[in-house]
Length: 345
Ligand code: P1T
Image (cartoon, rainbow, N blue to C red; front, side, top):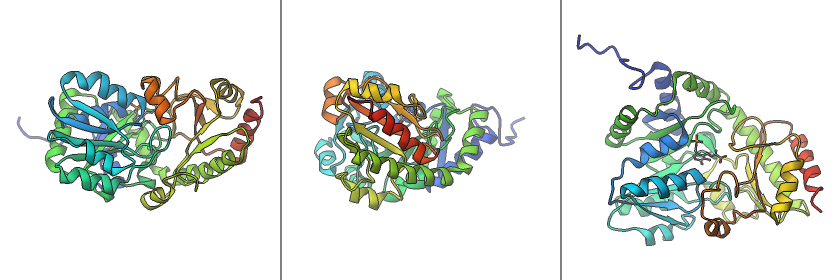
């Protein structure tokens, strides 16, 4: 009695989960990792570092579920949120208040691929005593390591590139600060939204091929974006790897590659519908980051919970289509998109 052998109860710790947490913490270059039942529960646990009456600055373009958690759930408990364009660090500086305790950024953003300068935002936030959190889901630690730019906490939906096979939902929080880590662990155990041992094993399997998959997503993402840039039926391409992207230079500095997420404007709901209903290799579905190419309609799917006027301002129009470029032969992916785009009148 009273002698701890390392693992007492699987909500508190589990060997497979512990292996995953150590693995992803190492990939991000962080000291501590905590795995959760979903990306959303990882983000929710991270937000429990702030209390009612405190203020959080958030990128105005995030995954729709993040916006929903902040604006519809956590705001009810008195946490104040301001959604600003974090692609310019001076907007973050202007939004700082006495009670700002956290700056939450997504980069590149879902789905219009806006890039935030992590070092610049970290400098601004730290001067005001606020922590910086980065949702690194779109690139994975293989292509971007936010802690190296001064970010305090990295969160992931492991559902995406880290797992990589579209067969598990999960999330993780990685950080260096011991006191914050203790609290995240306390929340993980108290709330109990843990990643199961089996899902932890699936994500561990995913990390074994992360480098290979990300190289392929990146190489194919660049080719698909270049193809779309030249296509007469495509009006705008959102991809930080394109020289036409207004933050291409920043993305080149901050990222090791550009990844496999590409969005493009078709001009109307009808045109988007034509593309989404005509593809054969690409699968119409939510989610991203798996080995298979998924295509989606952000305005009615992943970002339906974002206010219509915000969607319009951000470019999440009815004509916007998002692709998560998989690892199939890229010529097949391009041929599929080409035949679908050609059906637009
Ligand atoms: O689905 P979940 O594992 O809870 O992760 C939420 C999440 C968090 N952060 C980012 C950047 C995300 O893209 C997501 C989930 N996104 C989708 C399901 C999607 O299709 O965009």
